[in-house]
Structures are given as C-alpha cells and as structure tokens.
Length: 124
Image: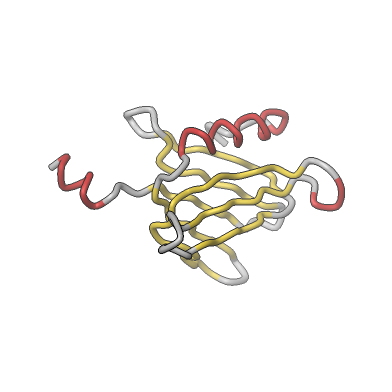
C-alpha cells in the first residue's frame, strides 16, 4: 500500500506523529465488516498514540483522545490489536490529514483531523 510505514519504524513514527498533532481536533472512525462503519468520536483533541511492543499485546496501538481541561471531561482510549498496517494521508501543506490503522482481522481505524470552525472561517 502506498505510503505505508514500515513495521520497524512504527514506534518512532507514532511518537513523532503524536508530538506533531497534539491537541488537533480529530474524528475516529471504525470500518469493520462485522460491525459496519461507525464514528466513535467527533472533534476530540488528539492526545497521542503508543505502540505496545512486548507481551500478549504486542503490535497493539493505543489511541488517546481527550477533553481540554477540567470543564471538558470527554475522553476516549481506543486500542487496535494485532496491527498490520499504518498508513498516513498527508495534505498538500505537508500536515497529516488522516491516519489509517488496519488490524489483522481487516478492521480499519481512521483518524481524520478536522479544522476548527473559527480557523476554517478565517481561511475563507
């Protein structure tokens, strides 16, 4: 698949990806033959991702999304087990627009970064 991150670079890539995209609003979509397509989160700030490299959870990616302060208690942690592919989608400006993570069973998790409404209006 075009743009796929090699497995031996996953940990470094996810750490750098997390730093670059910290706080950006994101939607988390789950695409599954068993469950269909579902949006699990909308416009939550991206907090980061980690890769488990050892033990029974090896090759699992944990995605953390969360509220911004005490007044915003929206939080989500989503774990993708038995990851097989990690593929970023980069926009014309060089920033990540989305990240697709596919598990061994074919389920795809897609993080789609969104523009803040006030920023989108200012760009118009």
